[in-house]
Length: 279
Image (cartoon, rainbow, N blue to C red; front, side, top):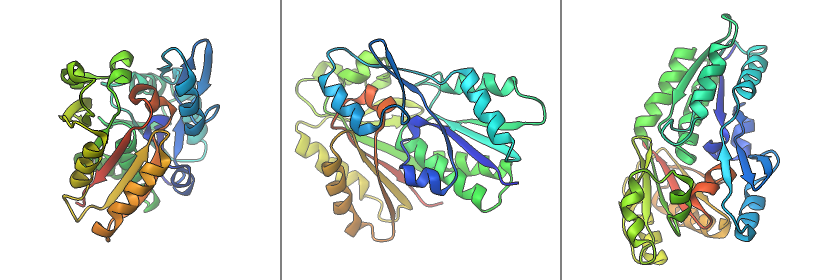
């Protein structure tokens, strides 16, 4: 039986890719006040950003429970021989810890290889998709896991955020905290480095930040795959992707959205790319 790939909803993979490649996505929970909503189940990205703009407080997220992971693993194991479970950086969420505890509670005949992607959002999505493609080719679990780890070394996420306030208030700012003093005067570019959100560059205007992101995304004209995603600014993300295409004619492109569990921490109007290099 083929290896089954499991991930969590911070991967921000488009639904069509999830369905096409048989990936199981375990949802995080988004909390608005006293209301708890499963990411991608009870609330989608469009609903989330509309609500975020109206919400007076600060929404939160919580990792999937151990019981939820255990149920998913047992359900998947009934149809698949082995499981490779790939998740958001352990430096950004306790999701990996829940998955690890759940694995330890399973019967011995269920094998789960758990991988810390040291990434998030579309960067995690790139890693998960590479693993799923390996599984489709009939690779054993060890090779599927290796495909994921190899993709980790070839993936770079860079994003323009309107403000660092959401990252700061959500406690996910990491080394990008060095930019906080300039919140009012810059449109920061951040990236994921060693599993944390880190500063990339300070740019003075949104237009200049978008242009710099374009330069960075087209620097390597041999990229294998590019994910482009936004946060409630779908038209901007689509226009950005279509602008990239002519300069990267041999690159696979996908347009996505930064979902609720990620949007809580980056806020609206983010524009980001996840770049995957060839081997």
